[in-house]
Length: 106
Image (cartoon, rainbow, N blue to C red; front, side):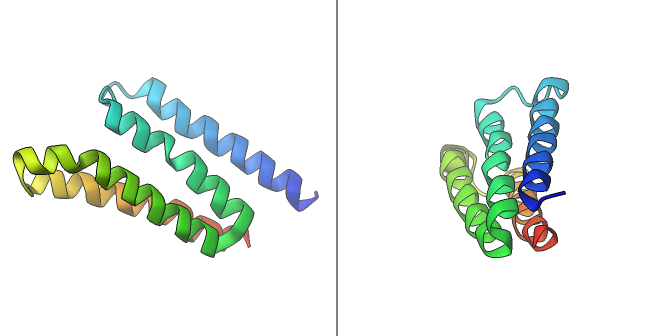
């Protein structure tokens, strides 16, 4: 199998899995969390296409977008353990898919 076909196959299956979590998980009713979940798709694409460095850059950009979207929550409630955990889980997910996924794909 050519690598471009593998890349496309993993991207499509990964995107379907990411979108499936939006449909099947009722807790993702907040628009910020929906956008955060959708940010996983470009992170996956960058990791598959450009490897670890592209995945890292995409993970950093996705983290910046997510933290910017969560700024109103942080300014309203402060740095509570729930807010920090929410951001930490997203950063870990972006990093896992971007960096580790990019390493596996290269």
